[in-house]
Amino acid sequence: MPQRCTVCAHPRRAEVDAALERKHNATEMARDLGVTRFAVAYHRRHHLHRDEVVEVEQNAEGFAPPSTSRARTDPKTAFLTSYSANGDLKEALKVAGGTRTLLRQWQEHDPEFVLRFHQAETEAVETLEAEARIRAVAGSKLVRRVFRHGLLYEEVHEWRPSDAMLTKLLQAAKPEKYTDRLTLTQTSVIKAVDAEAWNSVLMIDGHWLAVKRTDPRAYALYRRHYSAEKGARWRRPGNTNVTSAGETMVLLSQCCRALFVWLRGDPTMRLDHQTGVNCAVFRNEGAGLSSDMIREADELAFQRWPGERHFTYVNDSKIRSSNPGFCFLKAGWQRAGRNADGRLTILERL
Image 1 (cartoon, rainbow, N blue to C red):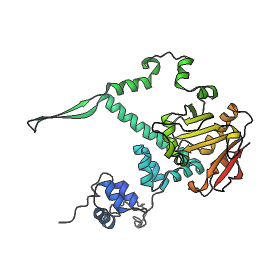
Image 2 (image 1 turned 45 degrees about the vertical axis):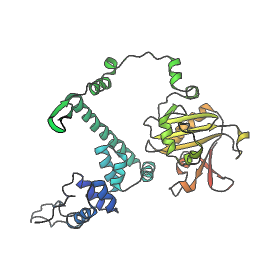
Image 3 (image 1 turned 30 degrees about the horizontal axis):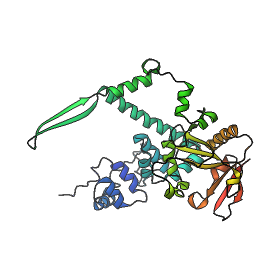
């Protein structure tokens, strides 16, 4: 009796075939699929090219011979296909065999990819909306098991529609009719948004929103920035500040995938004697072109502090790019030398 291939019967077989065409780790792949590494090796050796469908064109004399070459999937196409299907950025990068750094390079240098990325993001959201409609009307399956004296006595399968989901869909479709009516005053808004953010900008028609320096969404992005490693050992538990003391402007993208922090401190208190407004943190995880976002942040800082010099430090050893600070240079900044020990590049915009 022939051996049964567990990978061929796996629901993620297409994803596995695409991953096997690239450089891969069979042990990690097997662990992710819940099979043995021998099953992955058996499938790669015997079944990887078996189900390949080759299109042929018919001519006047008959059919053209099938091609024996197997087209390799473009990493960008593989990423976008997976991202539009499940909306999972980490899983899509795994399918494409890429990293977040590679994704940011694609977004920075390939305008066509940015357009396709937004289209894939829209398709992923539409898939979620379709699932939300199903749960609101048909409901989700609920299984109740009743045990008596340690034995299964009854198992009930039922579908329960979600009233909360139905309410959310109605509020999104007709907010003027179904949205709760709330009266907001300037005082109540200031309680939600700190005074510095209110005085600078509450919301703009662009990428950025002004938030508090202790905003948990901003702190989550800040923790993934390399500058957070330096002060991690002295940070008290529960402290979600993303910047030190001084005049600050904390900007968070509307999709919560990018963070920009401006800090204007006392020049006499700085050990490096730098003057102006410091870009203390900038992290972009796919909110848009970094250079465009830096330009918008510059305009907001110029409105808050007119005529001030903008500067930042870039740690070359922490950046995977071969051209550290390239997005700042594209936004109109320029190099202004290096720091005292030569480890950091200084960039400025006047």
